[in-house]
Length: 276
Image (cartoon, rainbow, N blue to C red):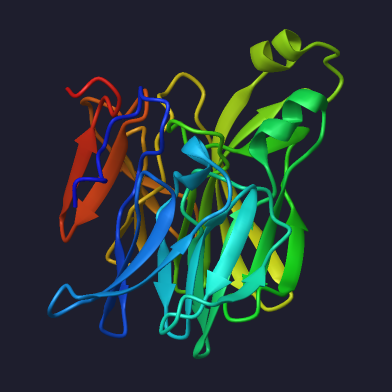
């Protein structure tokens, strides 16, 4: 499809990764349409015009049984996978980052921040959990720290930096001083950290915190073997306790870079913007 690309310096959308569920492929084009195709034949099934323009379409589609979730203007919406009919529209602030999926006891939930860049106006961020099929809010949990936002260190408006595996959630935070009066003062006071949580139907229980002072921030954290975390500081962390079990030296992700874990190998893209 000629509409898809990976450039991040352009005015238009980016990060347009397709998704697949129940025999259908779903993708967002650069002109702002959500498309559905038959996964075996590639036959077009339906297309829906999304609200907004440009970077407001820069998020990966989330495809789940019974619902497809995509950006809709400045928020998120759920669509019928068979027809493209809009099933629900959330009040969550739009983000370029992909919504995290939490599957618990056979049901699918969506986890997102409420708007990371709001800290510049001294507004703290929270983590919100939605029912994927209805869009209804299940819970809302405050973030730890003086004044915090979810941070992905990727291009876009944020928030990002959420990884979920089973009932564990790992997030990266940028914490700043709530008493700082100016935006530059809040930026100078900013510290980064990685946090582990256990998810329940009542909310997110905080388990541990690892400071990231002096290290490059990373993108969403890959989970290795469901028990360990590979961080942007090139550390292996026990997912339950937050204990760092090993460290190594090497290139770290920055400037929109990211990480990926496949079996026992961790991959790092140091620069996600300049094509290196």
